[in-house]
Length: 572
Image 1: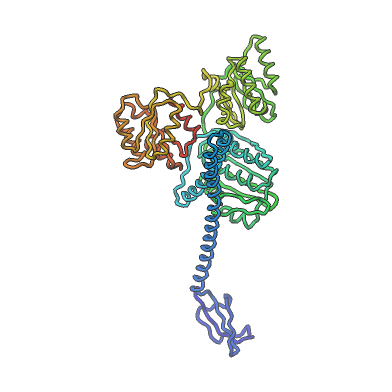
Image 2: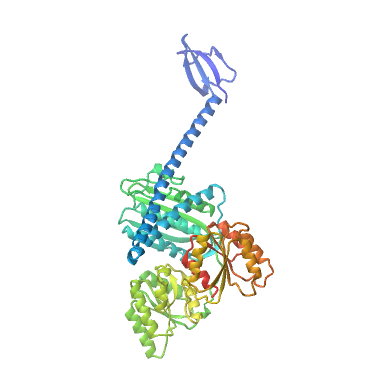
């Protein structure tokens, strides 16, 4: 709207204007200018140039605020990156200085591992935000177990909560489908971020409550996560900015918090990319409640429980919630089960069965038996005294940390806690149908006589991979680029290579093209030789690209040793 004018006598509100422009509107007067001759100039409407100027001023202010946030981000990142880097450099120097002192070296390496993990998480946040802002974020649609997702999340968070002496409570509401379709890695990233914030911003000795439930939805279910803490909380002003990049809460009661300030911005965008929603309620000094709702497809897989017909299962568990869960999940199955609350009662039940000429097919050692040592002692005794008894461990522990000793104690399968009906039944079915016990999926397999083609252009990465493969006694051939790899494969006799580990970004020919050429080479093994991408390209679209090129799987760098060994176990 353009500016219009009228001239009136001052002090006479109802007087007719002495002069006015044709578009003047007396009801839309925006400015009054007294004149020296006793008249008054009235102005209605808006000066377009003035409006444009106000818009420019507002945009300048927003740009300055954003620039200030970025400067604060760079300052924080400089500190936060240097902190783990200083630890890595310092602990490396200490390890070299005390190279002959095993305990000192082990302590230094443990601290380097922690610092490296923290540094990697900072880098991942920055890369994720860059990916999101460039519109290259993609969400996977993979089949996954809700129980395993929650177990993996809890083994990350619980140690952090214990370090700050928090009381951590986990609970489940109605769960009617455990096997779902979605992006488990991104969902875990969302949960870990939210729970990490609860741990960081709650003073030592605080309470953190985490729950999960499901709601019916036309296309499957809505997964609902809630995290409530009694931490420092947030002001209404900060709540308005919490999802903006580079924002971090500050408090005089909590020591300096490390992080990028990108976490919640990433969380919101991931949730929305999955078609979900996130809400936050908070009050300073009283804590925070975060609710996440994500719609997911449910699996239509049905469990065939015939393998459990007439089987006898002994369950050792005293936790009332888990006891009720066992009863609920096993009530309509064709097996017989008995629940005892202690190792003494378990031994008595086994002895009574032997006296009656009966036998137990399997025993589940539950989470309430005691610490890891107690569990393994009981497992060793049951295994030695009942050689035909299959032993399953249902535990919150990280299986990768106890696998070696657990297997040598006679435990043949692992059920991660929290578990649901399908994971419990599938664990029992797999154990009872598999002869010879549990394969060591995270330990180095014996691969003597097997041939592996390692394709890697970086000398250091090639040296690390060769060292890891050396523990398997497999014969390892190397190639510095995709072209050499294709030549070596095509020149090999049938059945020679049992696995190809393929880097992606290489000179001459990249890994994707090399995989396509191997699959289309016409070699007798072209379609069946396993090819795994081994790369720092770890986004969902990178994994999809590897699959479309004919690869069987994806190993992220830095290499996860346990995952690496699990893949090697597949070619035994």
